[in-house]
Amino acid sequence: MGTKLLVLDDDSVVLEQLKQVFGAEGYEVFTVSQDREAYRIIAAEHPNVAIIDLNLEGASGLDVLREAKRLDHALAVIITTGSRATRNAIEAMRQGAYDYIIKPFNLPALTETVRKAVECNLMTRTVRFTGGGGGIDDDVDYEDVMIGSSPEMLEVWKMVGRVADSDASVLIQGESGTGKELLARAIYHYSRRRHRPFLAVNCAALPETLLESELFGHEKGAFTDAHSRRIGKFEQCNGGTIFLDEVAEMSLANQGKLLRVLENQEFERVGGNETVRVDVRVLTATNRSLVQAVKEKAFRLDLLYRLRVVSFYLPPLRERVEDVPLLTDLFIKTFSRKHGKKIKGIAPRALEMLKVGHWEGNIRELKNVINSATVLCKGDFLMPEDFAPLLPAAVLPRKVEGGVGDDYFGFFRKVLEPEFDTLCRKSKGAVFETVSSSLQGALIRLALERCGNNQVVAARLLGISRNTLRDRLARSEG
Image (cartoon, rainbow, N blue to C red; front, side, top):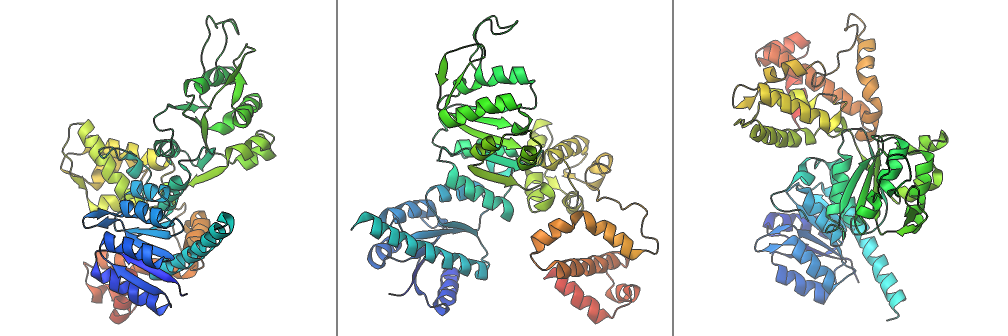
């Protein structure tokens, strides 16, 4: 029996394209535009993989996903969409989708995803045969935009969908300002515990003794100011979720108590002998390397293992520039309402300035900059001059000390060195081509700007032919 692929999409161009691509790969492809026809094929043909569009005419792809999984639990379903709304990615993964892919398709990547989905389907069918013996409100969207919907973040959101309903401990790592608490709240919101309490505690904001009392409570007379019994955060959110931010700052003594809670869901209040039992899911975050902290004897290895049953890494904003326009748009709307202004958007030149910023403070820094610029704005759009007081610290690219002089090698080395590791990671073996083509494109665009977009004059300035200039310009635009 050959490998069977079902494609459900109301776009005839997509149906024809995927039929040709996967037909050439040897798949038996069923293309349909109606959900009822898809159900009939699933029941009759038992395809290995289904590619289902999220926004169908008259039907929701998520509803189709649920019904398809009911008809055939082993079916590997890939949800596709032209929208970057991340709540859909989370919900799709929660409902059992194999993957979630944004249009337009990267066909080689889609082909590889389908191949892996087929393998998963065949393994699932084998296991089943052997073993059996025969959300967020519509008007609240900060989870989508405060974190981002770049390709890197889409992978994060897909994992949220996979793990939200479990009770596994989660460790979130990332630089300050990347949105770790917002990610924790998103995990909570999509979990089974979303109707129970959620409490957040910053472990770096309290001294050791106060943190112990804050988390575990204390009995009357436990210390000088303990005039009555206090119930700690773990008891307060029994049945719910607790988020411990900056967990690396917790003392070794408190780490031991936390380890006991994770292992046995029990503890004693400060100054008490009564054992308190709770049912709490623990989410933690840190901007430090816990592995390094373990090496420095500042963090317990056994606790690290318990905390990172599931581990997330939030990349810094400078590594996901695609999110800057989305975040900027959100913050403009937010602060326009707050300050009673009617700002419609941001000028393209100003947005480009934001996109090249280094953003040491990540999303938090960008948010503060937009807030300040909104206050300073005199018109309907944020202009470059609205950011003038903020440029030295926030949005101007770093100036290389010493300038260029005659040492171009040294100059470019200084420019590239801070970003070289990121370039290597993101370019995936094409660093030379990426940097070379980008440098040529930048030179040509600068020359055109200086020459009033006169290609003949710009080519003469650069010392290349007009045809070469056109060719390099076409490559940079392609």
